[in-house]
Structures are given as C-alpha cells and as structure tokens.
Length: 518
Image 1: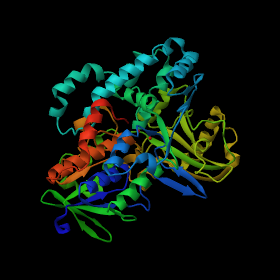
Image 2: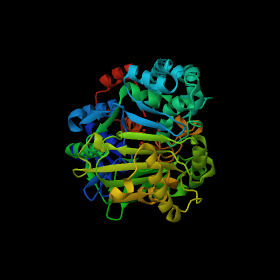
Image 3: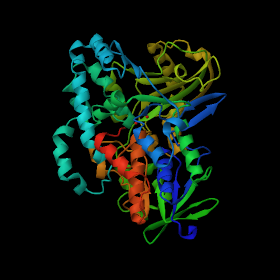
Image 4: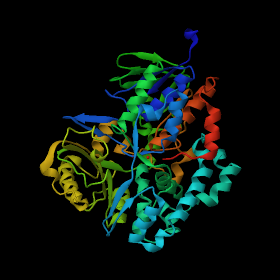
C-alpha cells in the first residue's frame, strides 16, 4: 500500500510549510520538508544567544483560530501544545506629536483611553468595530479561496463587496471616516506595517487588521512565536513527516513543464508535487531557471513593488523593565516623512518610528533571572543600493538607543550583555529575502488576490506556493490560511480528499473571519 503513497516535498520549514505538512500528512501524503537552516520556523523561529532567547521575526500572535483549526485537524489541541497569554493592555502607543495610548481589548476602557487624547473620536470607536466586523465577515470567504484569474475577482459576490471594501480609498482615508485626530488614526493603522506598507498607500481593506486585535486578541505564546513553529515541527514529525535540516535546495527538478522533485548538494528527492515555502521572489530565480518561467520571470519580479525592510537589534540586558509594556510602538511626529523616506526616497530617517518588545513582563523563560531580552525594530527601506549598511549600521544602532529614551528606556546601552544586529542586507543574505524586504511583495491593489503569485504556481505544473509571497498575503494567520488553500488545491490535483474536518471548518467560517501579520 505504501509503495503507491503520494509523495510531496516542501521547500522551507516556515510556518506555511509546516502547516501544509500537517494537513497533507493528515490526508495520507508522505511529506518531506527540506530546510536550509539548522532550525525550523524560518523568520518565525527563536534565536538563542548567551542564555537569552529572541523571536527573530513575528512577535504578535493574532487570531489563533486558524492555527487552532489546523492543530485540531491533525488531532492536537493548540492550547495544550502551546500555552498562550492574551495581553491586556495589548500594547502601548507613544505619539511623537504628544500623548500616549494603552490599547486594551476592553471596549469601555478603550473608549476612555481615546477620550483622553481626542474626546470626539472616542464616541466613534464602537462604530469602527461594528463596521469592520461586517467587513471581515463578508470578506472572509475571499481570504479562504484561491484567486487564479480576474474572473474570480469579477464574481458577483466580490462585486457586491466593493462599496464596503472601498478599494479606491487608502487605509488612512478609510479611517478618516471614523477618526479625526491623526494620532488616533495612526493607532489603528500602524498595523499596515505588518504588511510592510504605509497606511497612506495601503488599501482600505486592511482596517480589519487592527479590528482583529480588539475583537480576537493579541497573544504571546510562552517561549515566543518560535515556540509555535517548534510545536508544529514536533507534531509533524509525530505524524510521519520527515524534516531535513541544514539542507539547502539547489534546484527544483522540472520535466516537461512539471515539478517532479528537488536536488540538494547531498541528495535528489523525487515527488508527485513540490511546495515552495521559501521567499518566492528571493528563491525562485535560483530554483527554476528563467527560461522555464513565462509569467514570473526575473525581469517581471524586478518590476514588482516590495515591502519595507527592518533594522533589528536583539539585546540581552542586565536588569528588568517592569514599568515598560510587553509591546511599545513609538510613532514619530514626522510619521508621513518617515514613511516617504522608507518607500519613496529610500533613505534613513533621522527621527524614525520604532517598536520595542519587552516580553519579560509576561514571560520569564526568555532571559536568565534578573535579565531581559529586548527586541528592537526600526522600519527602513528595502535594499536599493542607496544605503551602505556597513557604514550606516553602527550609526543607526546609536540612533535607535537614543530613540528608546523617548519611551522611558534611558540606560539600555550600559546594561547590554549580548547583542545581535540584523540589517536589510542580512535579511537578504541569511534568509534569501528579495531586496531584504521583510514582508515579501507589497500588498498594493495591483499585487493582491489573483495578481499575487498563485497558490497553484502558474509557470510550473505540480508546483505550489505557500507563505507570505502568495495569496492571501503576509502575517501568520493569513499564512496559515494560505496553507489550507494550497493543501486543498494540491490534493485536488492528486485526486485525493482533504481528510480534515471540513464540515466543522466551513460552518465556523460562515460565522467568523480570519486575520492578518509581524
């Protein structure tokens, strides 16, 4: 019986690849994951250094419902496998233009908090929540189905949605219908950075991102988001999935237009289908020669728009910061100029916005006793050749430490025990991210739905994509949704049934919506 068992190779052990492995293994497929790094998780993994642990990429865990359903499909309970804490407050917003906001999922307290900054806007918070609940509910089915041509976009259901989605408006313009104070609008739109985009250019659909946080919570998995992918890999192995680490894939084997395996330096693995979970734009040029691609050629990829990148500092420090929130976002007074520097001018700002995670206030497993693991992120331009990081890296480190004083962290530099800096150049070299763009291809209207690389890859048959570079897009809940879409398409093409409980999944989907990302 096992001789004829269908075989699938997944390139990359990121969250999307791991989720697809669970669903495919559950459906009777023999799955092998091939990962170039020595750990699973891709950017959603843990870095350990001198007794300190840091999430490398995502630190917000949103809308666990999707992953809960995938775990349940595999016969496991996410709550038992990965304990999580729902944060309240969710994060602290500090405005360079004055004032701050402790964002809470408690509606009454949130109304009070907004009122302290902009009383008129406080009364419209409930309206914002109600409007976005409807928006998410109606758009959810489109986030859960493949988009393979413009015909999917022109469906009657999608046409009916247009007035609600208002694609002609930017996220900020959409929020202007609810909130007059720009600081409040920034508090509900900085989440567009999960997509690596500016709220002034990001489509209005993505107001659902901040709604998801208030409706469904911001969670911290004990051990960080890397604990989630480690649990997924352990469960996949228990289900018979083979995971090969330290094994960079050199080539996808294509015969007569069909993917039929992969080659590494050590082995050739033949398969019925190949799933690509590495960064699409960053890896496709190496894995499939340009002449074998018609739609997604190197030339076409070079013309696409890409998300911002990030300048990262992972700092192990002496002492604790119990008076600093788990998540703090500083929104610079010159926020619009800041974004223009990142997206248009491709230069570094002198007064950048930034984000600090101080997870020790929630989770004492990440640092030695009496110490803290700090994660510091500054959004910056992706690689264009305009910034020399060998020269600018040390200067930007000093600037970041100076900026941190604006949220009450004055003595960080003297306390540093260990540190690691990651620049856009490092994202490009270590993680093969195209142009070092941390959130993949930008989520502009001309690069969404059927205009993103398809889950069923257009240029090579029997090849599939999963992760932030394909539909529906970036961010953990959406990446997990891409795994469900891709797994269904792959099984359909193999003439196999998805053996997870679709009945309960579909009845749930009628009631609720899935969400969005790092």
